[in-house]
Length: 346
Ligand SMILES: NC(=O)c1ccc[n+]([C@@H]2O[C@H](COP(=O)([O-])OP(=O)(O)OC[C@H]3O[C@@H](n4cnc5c(N)ncnc54)[C@H](OP(=O)(O)O)[C@@H]3O)[C@@H](O)[C@H]2O)c1
Image (tube, rainbow, N blue to C red; front, side, top):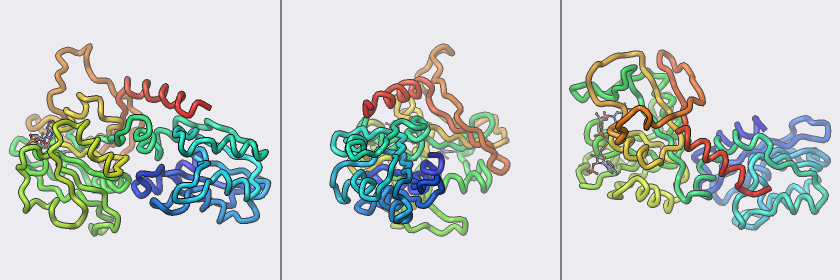
């Protein structure tokens, strides 16, 4: 299942509005004979790729899939039927299918005599590559990852407004990987005006990659000029005048966006945090001190310590000379885990 999750993560940012699923097929002796991940919309699902690779060796074997195989015919045929036709004896699933439309895969497999296990390492899969799609199904909005680069004293820009570069090349390369895994990259008009960022995904050589997420600037007063770099044609761009973060997310959801990278700045980040619309935070902490300059997050309207917004650290990584913290809002995480246990009901 860890390998299936990893395969799903590799196609993150290419499958929306469909889930980024990973699948592994083992033969009857337990050897890996096929691997697959969801193709872009209209293409084969993960199971179909893994079964094609396995061929006859799938017979009597096991399929390990991050999401319950579908039972409906959309743009592709039902994956449950493909598994039955391949003669798989056992299917291990992390996340039960939460939608009525595609549901029933496990039941169909069991009716055909296939042994099905649901809920294997479910939370890890739900918080990994499937998070964007699940948030879409359950809350009808995209999943939001807030990314910020800050000094040790929580500054995102110096007193004179300069902010390049707080972090080193390894952290900056990671930002491009984070962008590539999202369907949209969002900044506020303040960041667009101060930094004039291009917001594209670039490879190690600095060249734009072929698939680019939607660049989004939240600019309610129309202050961002036509000469801004987000208008350079290197990637699709959407300038929104949505009144609130929730309204922006609704607009993006309608454009099939399921995973958003919120890149700031502090005013917009505060608005998303205060609205409870940050699902995950990635903080790049540079060992520098400024002592003055913009704080990493604007006013959250929190008057006292007891009301602080708590985050739970889920991962700490060294990126060159900088530290990457991955966090989740604590209360949100508890609610989400509970919701996901209920989702699918199996
Ligand atoms: N180090 C980092 O990771 C990082 C990242 C980003 C930015 N920065 C720094 O942050 C500074 C810019 O800060 P900032 O706070 O001005 O930028 P910002 O948060 O990107 O932009 C703020 C603007 O967003 C607009 N906005 C749209 N909808 C909003 C909503 N619902 N709530 C609040 N604002 C909304 C507002 O302008 P309208 O009313 O006109 O819409 C607001 O003035 C720059 O110095 C930049 O270098 C650093």
